Amino acid sequence: MPCNPIPRNHIPRNHLIIFARFPRDGQCKTRLIPALGPAAAAAVHRELVTSTTRWAATWQAETTGDDRRATVVFTGASAVDMGQLCGSHLQLLEQSTGDLGQRLDTALHASRDSGCDHSLVVGTDCPALGPLQISRASHWLETHDVVLGPASDGGYYLIGVNHNGVTTESQRLLFNNIDWGTDQVLQQTLLAARSQGLRVALLETLDDIDRPDDLRPWWNGPAPQEQFGQHKLDPSTFSSLLRLPAQLPSRPQISVVIPVLRHEPMLASAISSVRVGESPDLELLVVAAEASEETLTTVIAHRVPMIASIPGRGRQLNAGATASRGEVLLFLHADSQLPMDYRQQIDRILSDPKIGGGAFRLAIASGHWAFRLVEFGANLRSRWWGVPYGDQAIFVRRKCYESLGGFREWPLMEDYDFAHRLRQSHGLKIANSCVMTSPRRWNRLGIWRTWLRNQRIIIAYRCGYSVGELGKWY
Image 1 (cartoon, rainbow, N blue to C red):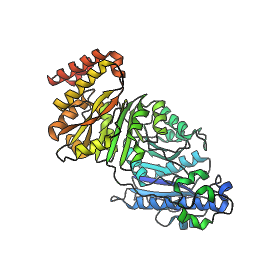
Image 2 (cartoon, rainbow, N blue to C red):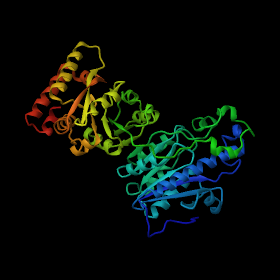
Image 3 (cartoon, one colour):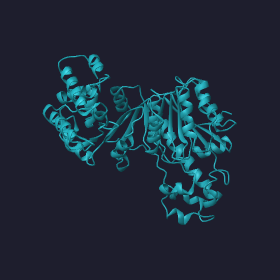
Image 4 (cartoon, helix red, strand yellow):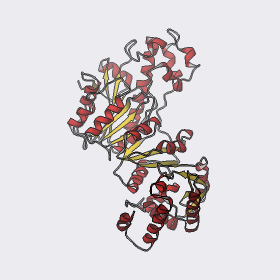
């Protein structure tokens, strides 16, 4: 039953719903009990609940337009007990009956009926979840129907619904015939969304705390394996032993955007070359059009976020730039790999405030001698004309990208056109290191046929032929 429902005269646009169970010994975190004991397992759960509700209250307060609302949908206690645990800043609503899917559907229906545009449901098991993921999910719901935050155990830590794009029946089917509590939850939900024709965005993959080993990254005390054991842990010590950060990270310096159409067999290598886990000021985003099962599996396995887009490389690149937060944008093809020193190369070129962006030299991953000539010609053209192609991983300061209006949403030539405008308006330099790209597009038509076709299109474009005409040739 509602304890303090949303007033009808104040309807927030973004509604955060927190599913929480009151921490009672022996009734929560049961998979931790064999190692920790019921009291210590409940203490872990208590820390997770209070940490989640603390950052949720902060997220709710950090708005200028009062367009956010956070509600704790609880079970296992009275509203009075839950309010004492969560504080007075969040609204409370008692969970409905039924399995998890029915309870999720009921909570989202209540949010929809109250007039909210976007509803996001989270649990309290994910210590890495915080305002960053909520803000990103809210942003992506502007252009997507559903947002999912994959958990490493095969479930999800967040589901968001755009009520303007998802009917009540489609919403119900998202939770129908799901094997809750198994590693199939995410995949089954993705299949349900696809069967309804819903556009889905994926956040980065995060870890839940369900088992003793899951505590290791968040443990501040002695080695956890030495502490685990019945009656060895004082529940009152968890507040100091567990490190549960929920602060918004600083803005990344570089955002890497990888556009994908259907299936790209080299995507995993492209993602690995970014080495996103090595630096906190680096962001990676995959923008997929008509994503295949292989693409979904790859982005989930590599724990990177993905958004859906209408096909078209220029459109996809712009979507990724809009969704990203970095001061520098790097656009990487899915069949290319960045050099080991790409960060240093970008820093070196952009240390000159008069330069707006750049690109890398081209290398092709084949030992065939003819590719050495193709590389030589491409790198010579880039140096002399200052106009690299998209497979050379163009990078640009965000303010310069925005001043140019992004990429043209053309069927082809969007990279050449953008690099040409960037060079003329803000300056462009070529890095010393090479991007390694796949030879498959040359192998498909033949090396020289592909090279001659590309030169013909470039010359025709510079002579004033329309992009529509060039598309027919391509």
